[in-house]
Image 1: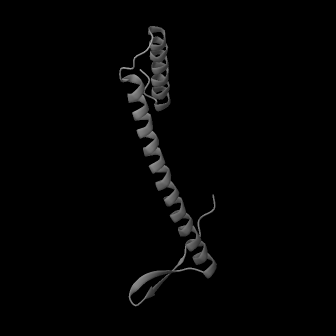
Image 2: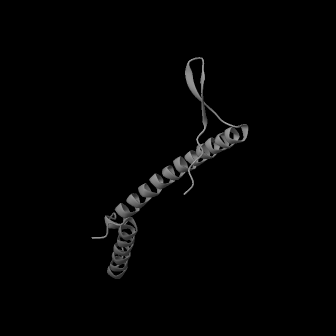
Image 3: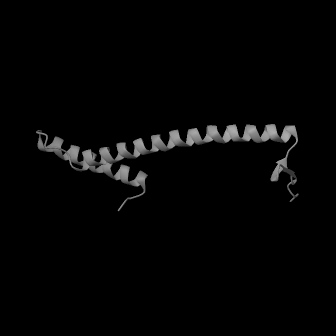
Length: 98
């Protein structure tokens, strides 16, 4: 693997500094802008992930502990099976399946 080029070190006013060719400096600035854009995207994805996790929590709570809803016994059994299936699906996708 080739060695990375080492920048020239200079002293300005008693402080050590690094001298870069203009092209390398512009590339450095472009890289910083890209990192800023990626950081913003990561923050947005993190917020979306947080909201999705909250949705899954709310959905799991809704289907595992439903309010009492009147109906026929067959419909209630079918609804209970559906709630269990959805709750299991949520747990499986979350990676917390028992």
